[in-house]
Every structure is written in C-alpha cells, then in structure tokens.
Length: 111
Length: 112
Image 1 (cartoon, one colour):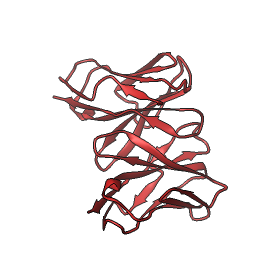
Image 2 (cartoon, rainbow over the protein chains, first blue to last red):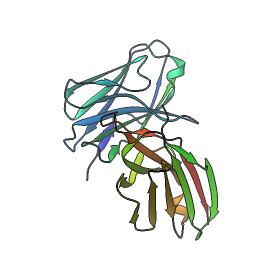
Image 3 (cartoon, rainbow over the protein chains, first blue to last red):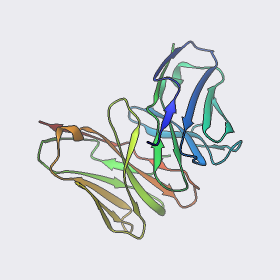
C-alpha cells in the first residue's frame, strides 16, 4: 500500500515556538507538497518541492519554510508560530502531473 | 489563488438519489481531478480527466469536462450514506508546473 505519513495528527504549540511538521512518503515520488486547509478557504499551497533540496513557494509561503534533504521526507517549519497559523496542515506527494497522495493531516493549534 | 470553484457549497440528499457537483475554473488546463475528503482526514483521489477527454466513468462516478465552458461535473449515482464527505476539484494550470489548485469543495450529506 502506498503511503504518506505525517508525524502528528494533533499538535498544540505556544505563540513564538518553532514548529516542525514532518512528512514521509514511500512511493519514490519526486514531488511533495504542503497545504493548509481552513474553513471557507479550501486548500492553499504553502510550498512544494520537485526534487531533493529544491523548493518553490506556493500561494501563502509567508511565515513558513521547508526542508527536503532526502527524497522521501519533506518538512514544514514554522519559525515563530502565531495564532493565525492554527490550521489543518496536509502533506501530499505525486509523480508528475498525476494524482496526489495525501497524508492524514496534522491539526495544529497555536495558543 | 482559487482556480476551481465548486457549486453547490453544500448538498443534502437521500440515500439512493444521485448527487451532482459542479466545478468551474479560469485558465487552460492539462487535466482536472476530483478528490474526496472524509471529515478531519486527508484527501483521496477519485478520478482524473484529461483536457482532451469529455467524459469518464469509475464505478458509480461519472465526470464530464467542458473545456469551452471551463467547467466540470461530478455525478455520484445511487448514493450511499458512506458517500457523505467533502468533494474537491483540482486543476493544473498549464503555466504552473506540477502544482494543483483546489476549489473550496462541496460538502455532501447523504441521509440514510
């Protein structure tokens, strides 16, 4: 079974903390994505990566950074968490323009 | 930016009825995909239709694509309570590499 896993299902952090969200895929996909999902706003792309050490900004990169040191792992970093980053974070991977495979999501609450 | 926009935003039907959801988009595309999301979970891919295709079937799902109107529809026939979920269309902009742009979704409730 193909799989995308995310390090936590639920996470609670305090304002100003540095937050790491990890995503791992076992399908040898070159593309990996981080989205956030908020009610009424749908899914918005934060960053994506098309190869190891490569990254591209999505629609809402401000306040976030990413790291892709290995093909199977894509990390999303909140350098200094703020309350407006409370959201559901979804990781996905794909090969080319085809279907994206999603992880189960991490619901992050920043207090 | 939101390229795909689903309509309606919410839909409530009885088990056994058909459910139709629509998606409109703005730019030229390579393909359009439909995804399903159960509450609080990740998205699951349902079907992909290429820009040179007009209709595609998968089990109880039927997807149409009209590139002249920049619109697509997803039909679920003989709905079941287990079809209750949110449904999203996603398009890939010809100029946006491998990125997908998702619409806001249609929340479908199927009552037993």
